[in-house]
Length: 194
Ligand SMILES: [Zn+2]
Image 1: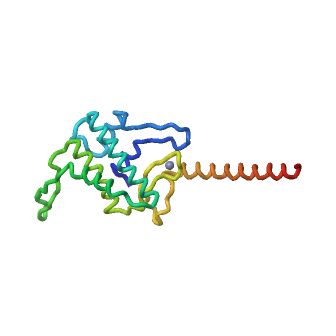
Image 2 (image 1 turned 60 degrees about the vertical axis):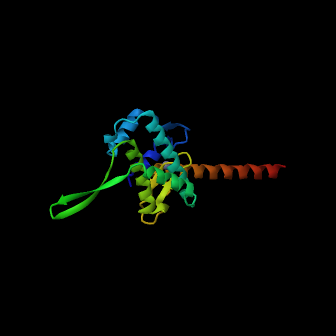
Image 3 (image 1 turned 180 degrees about the vertical axis):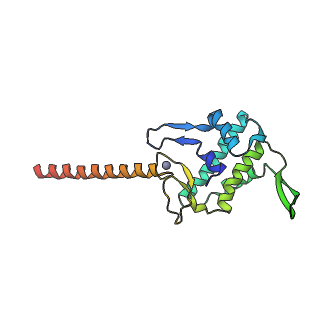
């Protein structure tokens, strides 16, 4: 599932291969421009430095909530209240619109500024919590990766952001077992000769 909140979370990029390389993509104006275009936020204009900081703060808040969910705990009341405050930054009005066979009510933001962008991102996370299944919000179990995804598998059993992380972890576990086995052999050998 694609969602602006997941996209924002994953702007804090870590090399899944374990090189230790990280990249805060919020600090790359080109990435932020693409993000804005991808999610239809262009009306808000270019973000200023304060807006980028607000995005980073929202990212930290949501990440904390995701990490709690990953650990099988509920987000704290304090973080929920903080998310609620971001949601409240963009009040909506209801428009009555004519359709081909009647009428439709359409919510619309009062303003399309950066408060609106932040509220939309917060809303996308709130939708995952309230409308989706919070247990499906997961962090890739490759500790070098940390990519956040929404598990849409039938049995909710997905553990990796992509197969490549699952394969990396398989190889790592295999090597660890080999190392452990080699360790046992040398200990046995030592005992024999000692
Ligand atoms: Zn991963």
